[in-house]
Length: 142
Image: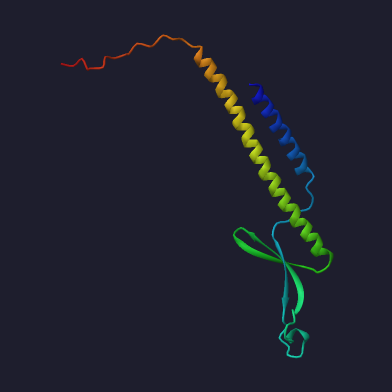
């Protein structure tokens, strides 16, 4: 019983710590940030040269919304760094939320286990007298 209480206490502390961390989440956004290089197609441009990377990078953020892929262009510069940080924060949020659900499930199971133990103890102290059968095993019909 003492072990169960200690375990419950640890789970409660972990749940509260996760809630605090979730409250500290900053700006976030889901998706994948990709830098793309392209060739413009002009034969005299530097991108047409052998081994050239091309123009770019041009940055795009891609994610699924209601089953459809949506792409948003991100301007080069500080916006790219901000978007990267927001994606990292979103992944942190997802991890914390997953951990919170796991801890909550363990807490619920532990509490139900404790309640089941109390019910079993109450049943064990019950009456030992058996009930009488209401009908005979064979029919009385003739």
